[in-house]
Each structure stands twice: as structure tokens, then as C-alpha cells.
Image (cartoon, rainbow, N blue to C red; front, side, top):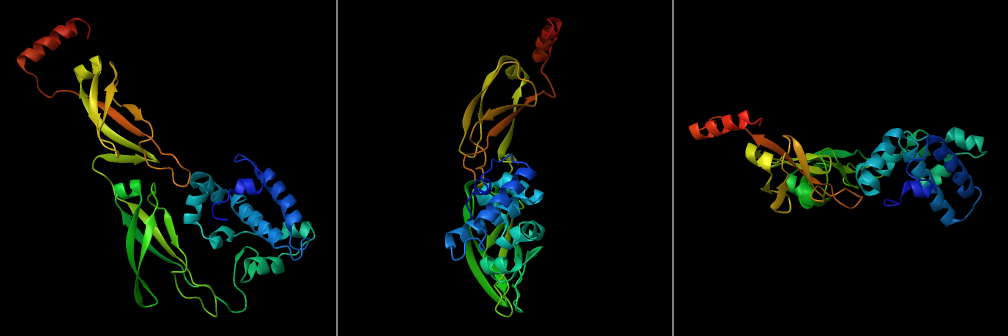
Length: 296
């Protein structure tokens, strides 16, 4: 389910309204409800997909995250329990003549309860652990594998984790089953690595775009020139058009950060400044006086 498009699951387009999402969910939930399809594993799996899709798309915050990061990026931030936290379809199912608790307990396991996911019979899920994972600007651009050491139940553990290319500060990478031990036979919690991306002396980041600052002389700005600029893929030569204004950005397509979970890349922008000399030779000053007389 991790890479299924939730909109496709409900037969909708990305811009669907709340009313359209609810209507599509009700229709499909009735069709694939286990009470109407006893013993049909395929229908049960479809019912689980439909409910997971609705749990995300009916929640404005989760839907925004899903739209922003795509399916892959979203599932690096949200576990299934995160997805179903606060999810309550009790009234909807009552309106349709179905119960909820027994069905959800059976198909999701561990005693689903309205308003969130819980575990019955004295079972308690283990605590989730969280720790910071620092990566360099370049590691975030290329993606990397990092070795992580942490304490778990009083013992030191190590593991390798893949950091996807395009990751941003604040992203949470989930390592399933590496949290605290559950109680009474409950499941183990997860480990969440909160990414912090270091700054870079040359590049700055704006979303998935990269920005680099470069300056040219006044004469080059007026007459046009070429400029060698650094990019994450090596130095590129660009044309600076005549008459460029200070602060103008020149775009180099596809040289930004990878779009996490979506494919493709952002762009690189060269923000061009104009250098004004702090002192002039007598000759330069005389030439500029002449230019000023001529209206420049």
C-alpha cells in the first residue's frame, strides 16, 4: 500500500473536493465492506486500502502533507498508526447500517478503536523513539547511507539507514520495529530519525531549488558577458544578457534537488548582483564622468 496513489484508490483526481472524497469513500466502503463480502480476501484488502486512503484525504493536514511529498515521501513521515490516529468513521458506518469495531479489529489487527488505533486485551504498543540525524548539504542532494547508533532497552544498537536524495530538514525517516518493546504481547514501537540538513558556503536551498549568488561588474551588466558558476553537478558557463538588473535570477533547469518521491529535480538559480567599485583611478573616474555627460 505504501506506494499506492490514494486518489486513484478512491477513483478521484488530485483536486477533488471534500464532498467528492466522502461520497467516493461511502460508495466504495459499501461495495467492499467485509460484511457484504464474507471470506473474500481480495475485497478485504481493497476495503483496507479504501479506509487508509480516506483516513489521509479526509484529514486536511495529512492531505496537505501527502500532496506536498507524494506517496513515498508521505510514508517516510507517517506510520499506519499515524495515518489512522484521529480517524473516526463510526457515524458514517452507522448511517450505512454497519458496525465498526469488530470489523476494524479483525482486518487491522490489535483492536482498532474509533478515534485512533489501539490494542485490546491488555496489549500495549511499545514507545516510539526519536533522534536527530545530521546530514550535509551534499548528502541531502545525492542521498546517502548513514550509520546510526542508539540506545534501546538499555543496550546500544547500530544500524544503517538510507537517506533519500532530496530530503529536507524536518523530514522523519521511519525505521520500523526499532522502538521500545511492547507490553502484554503488543507490537514494538518504531524509531524516527529527524533529519537536519547542514548549510553550505556556496549554495542555499529554496524548496527543491538551489540558489547561488554571483556578481558582475557594471560594464558587464550593461554590455552582457559570460560567467562560470558552480552547480552541484560541476561548473557551468552561462550567458549574462546585456542590461541585466541587480537581483535578476538566471535559471538552470534540472540542477536542483531531486523531488522526493515524485521523480525529476528542481532548478538552480544564479542570482546576479552588480559590483560597484569602492574606489576609482583618475582615468576611470574621468571616463565615467564622460559617460554621465552622455546620459549613462
